[in-house]
Image: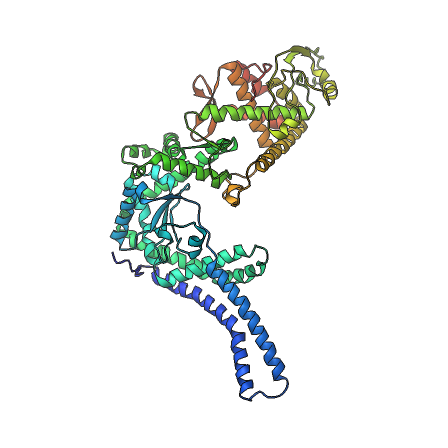
Length: 601
């Protein structure tokens, strides 16, 4: 292997010319800083030789020297900041050679076949992407973020591999996908390209430093220089990618076309697994410990459902790329914890309030607890709105000319949910014993008025209470809007309280997600989720249903071992239109008793 970083491939001359254009921006900035000093030297020399005698040259010379000194001082400080500022490092799971000797051997074999320097180290990221990352900056050594061969001056870049690739792809497919990435170490070793990349990364880090107290002025020239070299830097990277792709043409090119299909499939399954399966667990203070193993189940399920993915599961008989690791389970757990930190903002370490959960325990420890927590929050919101526990749905208005039907008492149970303060602290109250009473639809306004500020008798955590409150024959949706707003406020207060009670880490990645998976949910979405959770709790408690896990859709309700996927439209009919009839029919079909108290956490 030559290791010289030759860039004779297609696109490399363009990359080098663009790198030189970036370096010319740096040279012009340096010349602009030195120009006042050069003028001051000329004036001083002219004064000393007597060529500029008399007024106003003494004052002019003094002023130019003062300006030159200030510009040199500012330029020196700016240059030192750009040189010393540590570029951002992507959070990854380090993978030493002892933990994956076969993977290192595969990567080095690729580098030998393409005659490029081998990456200095390998790291994993919980994402469906792979790239090279330079970690040889001196700031990384000073900050302690780099302690291996990748932090040595002039070291080759680190190869960052998406962890889902290792579990879903076969060994041959992974080699084909990594070939063009590893080939990028050749152009990266060229001095001009490496220098230009270092200058751009330094400017980017200087912009971040400009936000610190006393250094705000540094951000403005850094942004100006970034704007001046932005186009050339982008074209340089395109040229580097073209050169790497050209060099990798002779390595498993036919297999790479097939492997790229697996990249797209892995991305789709990984996104569904994070948003539908992992996110509910993260919100409950639990993190699935084997996300990468779960993505195999998710993609297998996707292959079964999607006829476009037919035949992909036949690959599972071949050797998976995770066999290249010595301890796949340990690596999977570390990548899963990092995924929770990046996409949800969880702590960097496991703890009593941030513990792992296995897939076998997910239905009971996550799904069931999620449903009952949301059901408790829903009843706490109803209590805060002074909704009586014995509320029944209003009678529909008779049609013109139709005889009035007598009001019939509707048996319901009364009970006391948690007080209003419980919604802010997130602590639900335990349900009490049942106490059946009779009420009429005509008593609804009086019940609302009489219940204001008074404790509700025990046994009110029932589905009937929610059905009665949300029933709206006129379809105006005022009750739903009020309840949705209350839920949004309660949930926001709980999240703020949880953030204030936890430790305050220094890094922003520990407190806020770097890559949020979903935008904040609307009030209507929250209300629909909470009503669905209460319905599922009622089905589990009174109809023998159970919580389940669908690899693509997350928490599901199982009835007789089969998933019931027809609940969502009936809940939306109640939440959006105020029509409980479809949901009541569904409950009657399953044998769910809405008046029976639901067990809460």
